[in-house]
Length: 113
Image (cartoon, rainbow, N blue to C red):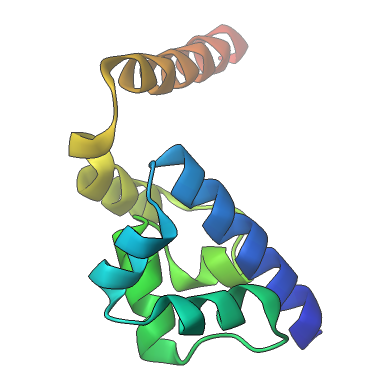
């Protein structure tokens, strides 16, 4: 089970780093960890300590639960926090896509009622 969590952690961190255009060096600087330590987290069978995991999640505008695979679906309050903390890092096109998704869901819900 722990190995599965580290695989999920590694994949999700890589995806978020790519989406947000973070280099490994920059993420490590912001987290206050060495690149060697970060590399071990990404390739070993161990997750980082709680405080480091929380730092990585915070910098990547997500939650520790998401990074470790404990929470695949966000609730309203989590989404609100994520959007509020990420809004300045989203392009206009990304914001437009999010609005389109919500508007499509809104229209579908209206049609059903």
